Image (cartoon, rainbow, N blue to C red; front, top):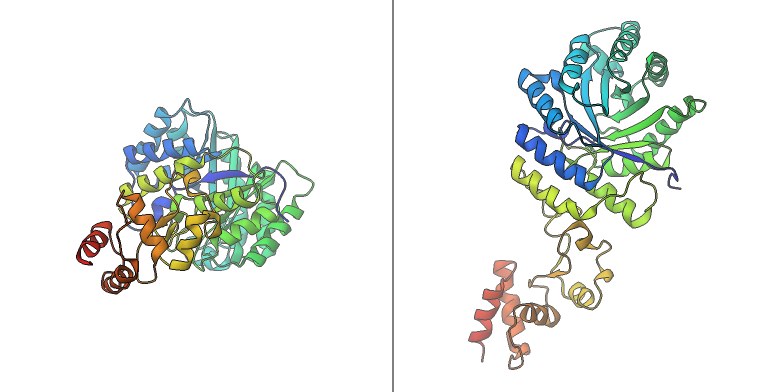
Length: 386
């Protein structure tokens, strides 16, 4: 059963999405992406990691100066280090509505190989760094990195200390995409139960796609009581990426319309996709849900005949809601009369004198070579058949 409370969305395209190999957003890039995310209507936009470099700090500071009058919550990322907290504060001091996300590894593997400290030291560091951060930030999210591979007792201890020290939200990231929906659901429920008497503590889900389960795990989190979900446009992110915002929104819009805290403006998604592709130089694959060029395109005769009569027969999502053209018919080797007539009609080409019995087999044969026939291809073959 889907969670009936209002879920918030934190978009992390500008932070986790930028961790995609080969991507580096400049100020202009970040401002453009920020603007489209704000139009889409997400609750929080995570804009980056100020302490990553001097240049990144400048970019985030300039971005914050330019969007200081916006109402969307801005989030910045920091490690559990004093210098990261101070740099984050300096970069965001022009913003009132700001959230600081503090991360600390909690799995044995990442504790040993990322920071080389023992668990007692980790607990002390969580306590001290959040107390320090509270001097500068009212809204603190503690992120328990790699928590899906952590010892549950140590994870709970870490989260308890984080809350006692001043964190108001807790992110449970499936950092390596290790979980299945059942496992992630169980974890969310377990942590919700831990803080059942503290309703002010919000639980955030952040899922990676290493096993292709980021979308499914995010939905499982919503159904298990998560208060916030974290996504990126197109699933951008390191390795296999993150939960794609457009997929989550499409599912919720189709099946669970009332679970989100804000109305999402679907029509801006196609603009967001084109912007991300233009800036990142990464083209989303043709079969990518929602955004792929094949998603609303049909080349099989039986399917074409049905969608020409009623698009709902094979399209469960209204493409135009997302600013995308749907019901597209292309002539391939499996196409037939219905597809040909539709293509001819779309190009204002009269077919009254066409001998379909002769033309269609020739078109199919040509399509075996060319895969998909363009209208000029079709027109040329028709002109040759008497």
